Image 1 (cartoon, one colour):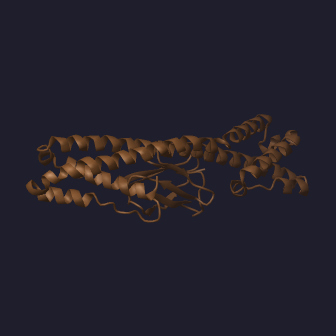
Image 2 (image 1 turned 120 degrees about the vertical axis):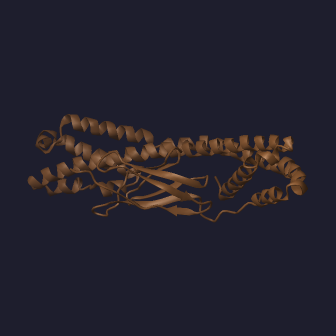
Image 3 (image 1 turned 60 degrees about the horizontal axis):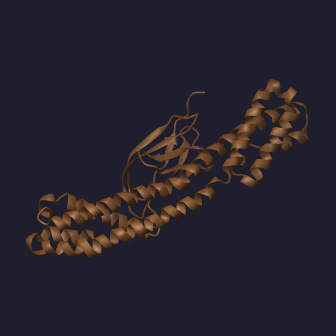
Length: 303
């Protein structure tokens, strides 16, 4: 959703909140209430469509991100075992071939990550019998191969989601046109009936009709997630606006950005598969057109 449409959405909400808070006044002009009900229906459809827009690619991107992290972590763990074996055998060539810490893998692009993980798997498989004492078994290598194959299948998914997202955006464009038409041709005209009988209500309505242009930045929550003990960044943390479909996953630097198209006060949940206690930040105020910074630290679980 564009910043302009975010600003419009804020205006619609302000207008509807004002109307619905003054039912005694609006009841005197039934046509006004009917038009307001129609606007509320369109507004709700816009919210639903904006959530679909977020899910169209956001959910797939989150799945891919989490699968990528799982792949990189297991690849790094196996590579570390092979590295230790190579060091004990004084095989410097093998050591260099598997020198892949998880931080390096996480920063590697897909077109290079897949070959790197394949090499780690093949080198481990070549030395499989000698790696058993290091915790690398045939079963584990087979599982690693499955993780790698599953991730390869996810690589084109975000591209495939673009078509779905475009359809949702077309729907959003039409819904905003419907809302604007209802305001300009119905509510704004009928509201003149209150100008004399309820001047304060009318003036507030007019004030709420002003579109407060959003700033150049999107309405979003951003931040950095770090370890409460080491202060090191934590990748792979799922960040979700509670009870909403707005999600993101922290990158290798612990950074995240969650787009939140509708301003308001939300709770933000930070969850990770293993290693840390999950956390929820309550009462986060998201302001139209602004980037709200929420940095947080997760407590590591006892090893």
